[in-house]
Every structure is written in C-alpha cells, then in structure tokens.
Amino acid sequence: MIEGTVAAGFEPVREEFARNFAERGELGAACAVHVDGELVVDLWGGYRDRSGTLPWQRDTLATVYSSTKGVAAMAMAVAHSRGLFDYDAPVAKYWPEFAQAGKENVTVRQLLGFQAGLPTVDTPLTPELLADADRLGEVLARQAPAWEPGTAQGYHPLVGGLYVSQLLRRVDPEGRLVGRFLAEEVVPGLGEEFYIGTPASVPERRIAELVPAKPSLRDFTTAGGVPARMMLEFLLPWTLTAKSFSNPRIGDITNLGRSPWRDLDLPAGNGVGTARALSALYGEFATGGNRLGVDRATLLAIEAEPAPLGGSTRDRVMHLAEARFSLGFWKPFPAWRFGTDSRAYGTPGAGGSFGMADPATRTGFGYVPNRLGRRLWNDPREAALREAALNCL
Image (cartoon, rainbow, N blue to C red):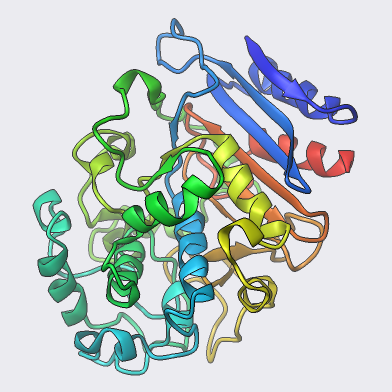
C-alpha cells in the first residue's frame, strides 16, 4: 500500500506512515519532507477513492482546505518582496474603496493576521458572485468589521482569503488574483503542482475523493480538538462563529473539493495539490527563498513574533486561548509547539492536512489525507509524521 522513498536516516517517517494505515484509520495520504532543498521523504499510499479500489499515485492531488491559506500567504510574500505593498501600510492605500464602515486604518498586517474583524460578510456569497471579481470587490469593501480592527483576533475561515486576493489584484501590475499569481509566479519555479482554482485541464481521476470523518469524542477533548464553546456557537446561526463558517454556504465540507467551488479563487480553503508541493514551497522559504525571489526582510517578518494585540488574545471565532497568527500563517503557541523554535510557521487544514517551514533546521514539511479528521490542528496522523521527521534531523 505504501510507495515512495526516504533518504537514509528518515526510515522512522516511513514507519509512522505505515502505522497511520494500520492503527490510525488512514485511507489515502501522502507525506513529503525537504531539508536544505533536498527531497528526503516522498511517500504516498492507500487509496484515492472512498471504496478503496483506486490506489493513491505519485501525482494524486488532494484538497487541503485551510492549508491553502499558507500557500496564499507565500504568494503574498513573493509580491511583498517585489515591493508591491508594505505589510504595515493601510489596505486603503492600495484599495481606496476599502476605507468604508470603519476600515480606513486596517493595515495589511492586520488583514493577513485575522485582526481586521472581517471573518464574514452580510451578503450571501454565491458561486456566481465569487466568480465576478468586480462585484465581489464592491461587496467586500462595503462590509463593516465585527470588532474594532487591531483590538482582537478572530480566524477568518473563508472570507479572509477573498480580501487578500482583492488586495493582490490591486497591487499586481497585471491585476491578478491569488490563484493566477500563484500559477504564474510561484509554483512553476519549483516544478510542483498546487492550484487555487483548479483548471478544467486537471483530470478528475487525479483528485482524491474526500471522505468525511467518523465522529470521535477524543477529537473534542484533546489538544487540537474543537473547543466546546466553538461547537455550541457553530450550532447557533446568529453567532459570529456560525456566520463565519457558513458564508459562502458550501454545505457538506467535502463540496469544496468539487465543482463549482473547486474552480473558484478561494485562497482560504479550496487549494488542491500534493504533499510534495507543500513541502517544496515551505522548504524553499525555510532555506532563504532564492528561487522565488523572496527577500530576507520578508522572511524575517514572517519568522518574527506576531504583532501584539490591543485586547484579548483569545480567538473570537474559534475560541482558542492564545492561538497566534502572523502574515497569513499560524505560529507556534503554548498548546501547539510545532517546529524547532518560534521562527517556525505553517497552516493546518480541516481534515488533517498541514504544511510547515522550520527555518532552524531548513526544513519544509507537507502532509495531505483524503479521510478527514476532526481536529482543528495537530491531527494524530500528521503529528506522528512531523515529529518523526524532526527527530531524524
């Protein structure tokens, strides 16, 4: 069931990968690790379909949900390195219409760090609206923040990526959204596949079928599980949490891996790619970003401690104590110390996917499954692989 290679000294990663299938309920998955730009772990196995008849192959693609945010943040970092915008400048400097309803002083850093108070919008986001960049920009510009920007943080599950894409569209000389910028300026430089807005040229058979998670009490009572208050508010449609996760109204989470949702520019959640692509991207950033033209100042900004908040550090949407975000990435925090030190950064996705850069060890890591887990972060399958890889260094 398991194929691929590991470099000498990384055999424990293959052992944990096998254990995921034997003991942790894995259906199909892939894992990759780059160290100093070298691919030292490249594993895939299991099945890419629900019935367990189609083997996962080397070029199988998977929907990675919010792990997409980190890839979008890397695209923005490339744009930042080209001098297209300043992280500490007001968004309205580049997008004048954004300066409505109390958003005139929101900075790019606050927008990327989920401090802008924009986890949802009042207007229903249909596929037709999402496909119309001009109309969508008008809707987003009108939206009032849910709290005073810069005083608190609250995860922006889906809408945040739309704001990021609209900002990039206004600073990029060619007016590209994140998905197109990624496809033309970032991914080709690494020779891997990752899409935000999957083109019709990608055959359906190459994309792993998503399988919903089986409920487990442990997923709500262990590190990375859904906080009780978040679960309660998720069930109450008038709460900020429920609104943040229900617009656009996608329905079953697995629909993000199907048309029409998969075809759109949704930089917060509909990315489709390989574990190897996640690892290569984060590995490039962890080793200096030379091939993508990422400058040292940009990397230092990403690696730095997150900017302090003016109020509570508890996330207003996920109700996590001291979750930490910076420039589009998650950063290590007391309940989740991924990586070697505080310079590490990455993004988890619903269902268990994860991509990470560890500058201290010059390592990039990527993991993608098709059977979805229920942790917000630190899925036991992913955690076992990540810890094994770092222990091998």
